[in-house]
Image (tube, rainbow, N blue to C red; front, side, top):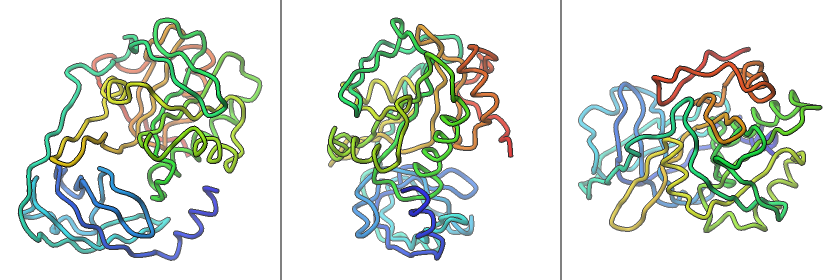
Length: 274
């Protein structure tokens, strides 16, 4: 499924995006609370790369914008962006203290796509690679990239015991148990790879360092790449903020519990292994 999606995106399909600016991240990223993009994806809050940093000059949180979005396997970007008006500045809520290396994830019991449960936190018995997804996210640089990398991780873990890969949906109204099961079947996920729903998604997302965006119309979790590697007992070994996490290192962490990341950092990006 992911391979077919990436192949379809290779030609560079173009869509119109309308929404409100949540954040500008110089030099070339803007976070938008966007409306439905017909033929592509539903409303969500997510970061977009822009083709030219000058496109963001004079753009501020709360601005209403319309943009042209080119979706490509070579790099999806906003190629045009125009401010159309002024809206309400979204409120961005960050956890006061996301889980750091060596700390324990608060207890949570997830419902998995196979009809079971997965316990995370102090009572956790397996080592777990935990991420967050939208099943209908089509951007090759986001969920398809993370899922593809995690499938490679799954293959590299062949024969390992008491290890799980868990992807929690950020879109529970759409990603029902039935949708998750169908998504898992389409990807041919192994029994080690679980898709899950969280009873208190906002609390889990904040613990993982994902911000919550509040607008007059909705409360959403900002879409972003995130992988938490958890030891038995829910202790955080390392956090990665990129789908290009190093496979060898994560395999070692999931099979041995080490090496640990830098405990002074709330998030890390380890150089990728190509």
